[in-house]
Length: 118
Image (cartoon, rainbow, N blue to C red; front, side, top):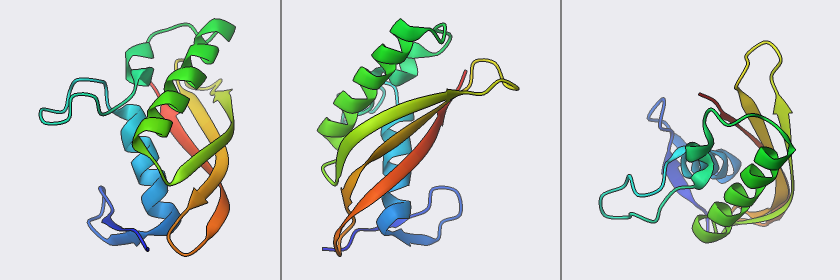
């Protein structure tokens, strides 16, 4: 089964990896309880804005992201995560997600980077 969607920025049709990356970003950037008919959609990652980028906060970020992705993105099996703190933009973190994805045609290895910032 091939997944078909629309690019939120351009309105053009997207499939496969592009659709998966957009879904992951939408899940991680949506605060919990903000969707009217789907209150449990989203992740606690949005609540972590303004949290110091120390070891404990990064561990909480991994946990919040993994939990939300397991719940809301059945196409993705997360294998590992890593973060990059942008030195030139304080408070901005890039979360790199590595795993296997069922993009419709086959299962493939994917790496998705999503930016979380204040």
